[in-house]
Image 1 (cartoon, rainbow, N blue to C red):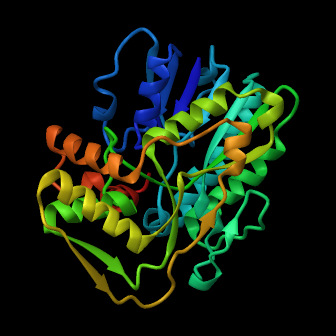
Image 2: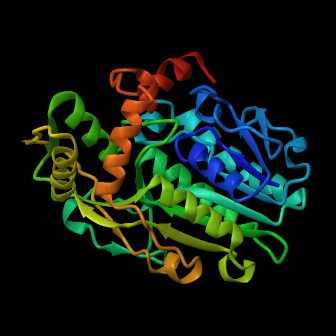
Image 3: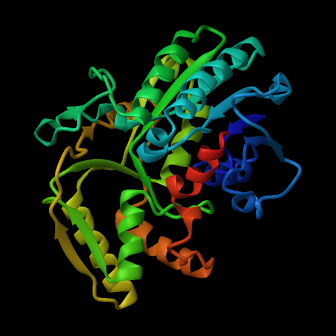
Length: 334
């Protein structure tokens, strides 16, 4: 059985469906801050759902489990910065404890969800290509919390406890737990709701990107890889590095071609630091035999169709934006 923490989340809900289709037994452990609807269509004897807080879990969640995929956490910079204490408790301290308890419980493999944002220096001219061996020293609350957890979790690895860290590029695409606060998804949302795509600055910021379907495939590859190949490894997961301005025009083209809508691309001046970083994906290809299959254009077309079909085009709904939804919850204390 595979335990997926945060299994009702943006990535988790896609991953759980793929795992079930492959015949795996899955136990989802989730606080369900964003509700249970993302998993509502998934049923059957191979799916077990447990409600709980990753900071206060019972060892019972490990019963019958041999693999843990740890996705649960506060995701993105605004949410992490809004409540730095909760960010550390959930993304760092709870992640380390989960790994420690997994090892004690005899779990054979622990896969930790990290982020390529650990490479970001906040300096546009220094967006050099980064590999997993590159020095990282993130300062932002979210990326820093992920890096702290990475370092401690990897130390737990041993012959009988395989630890794999996946650093994902910015994820995009349709998910049952939809988000419009990710760069591609935001551009698609603005194209549909406003008829324009906003680019801040000159759009020469680099982003490593990957579709959510491909992310799920990467996690499954990490589950199935030979332990000696992936144990103690940090692996970047990305479909490639994209300039923000090129991304905007590619999305414009896809929406206009398939939905007959004229989209304007607007450049808006920006002050202060900008996020820009590029990553290598060669290690994922070598160790996981991982190759992405979903293009930006294909993802956009699927996203627009799914959003309309599932009536997720109420774009002002706070449910689709992590900070907007979590702010009142964090204010009350979680």
